[in-house]
Length: 140
Image (cartoon, rainbow, N blue to C red; front, side, top):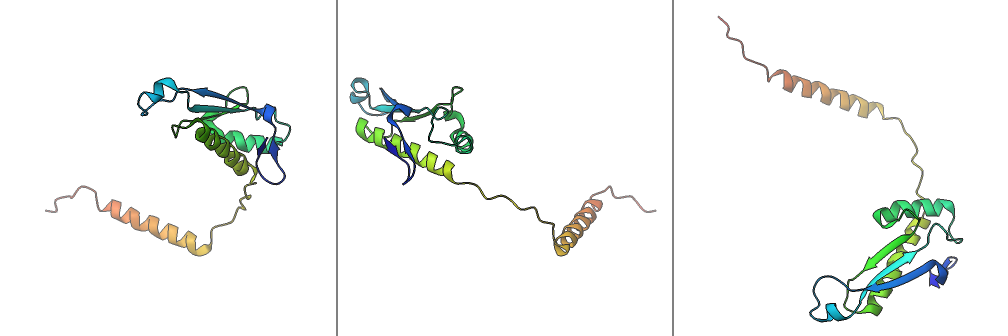
């Protein structure tokens, strides 16, 4: 069971881990030991998350979200399988915590009269600068 916060826990059946050989430095150890962790979370099937949370989680996950609705995290930060496993679980918990936060609704406001006047004055000034870039006519 993975604890997200005081009220939310993810069941073990929702998570699956597989261990693969890591890429990058590590000497001969990298060829012998499967230290990289691939953590899969069946987010779409999870009864613990509301549809709104799932939608926010999908947006936060980006390319890590599969077509089947699974969130896939790959971690190969350290040479230790146990540490990589803990890092993957913590990253998943952070993603779900971020998805729990409901974004504040933006309230549409009108621009102030002063800001409208400043914008128009800047446009006039910019237009005058551009007028000065024309061809120079010979006066005879």
